[in-house]
Image (cartoon, rainbow, N blue to C red; front, side, top):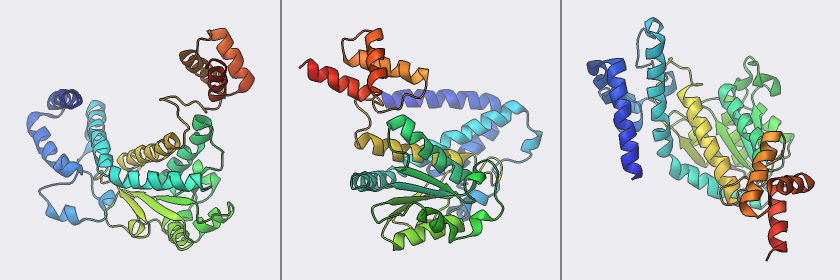
Length: 320
């Protein structure tokens, strides 16, 4: 049934694309885009050996002359290739998540290292773990080349120092129980490579997320995650498909780990922090679904104990 649903959706997508791109141009593009779900040009065998795909010229010419609708529809089509490319790396992502869970259980933490978009994505993922899962703020730590000021404004040449990343990590006193994930679309960022290389020497588990095959970054880590999304719609703009793929992989890493660490009950975030009214309302509904409490009492107890899990556990212990 799932396969039929996905196929139906894909056929509808093809139908819309025929209209927007034209039959002949669309067929040419499909032949280019669907080769091994990689977005590479099947007619050009040299592309299959290209280790710098993120800098490869876009498949499209004169996009500055296109109407807005065509720009958006083509970007949307390119984006559909990203989850397919991520799917190919699930075995590697699984390997990382399984190892990460055991290390966190032993007192380890997760570090992200990145520059530019990659660094910001790591910080974004790290910053969402405490409110979403009620985990400590220092369990997942995102570091960016150039420091926190680089989150909003690029710091010139910050990513070119291979020693700075370990110095940034040193503030947190890393140990062999910790895990480091380097994020770099190109796979050649010195800040990231230097950090994971030193971390590996110190006994930390190392992994990476990159969008080029056979990169120096992949060679420097224990578990490389190489997501081949193909050339960007705008040549070299890795904040697009490459950035999207990194976000999807980061979602998998931390969500998968938090679930296996018991931070999700059933399918609910029972340890989430009650930082706003929307989350208080959500927590109230969670309690009502698991108990016989009405809305008023469920909310009162939630605010009293500050935790969905605590209220549910107390209620169940009293109603055995």
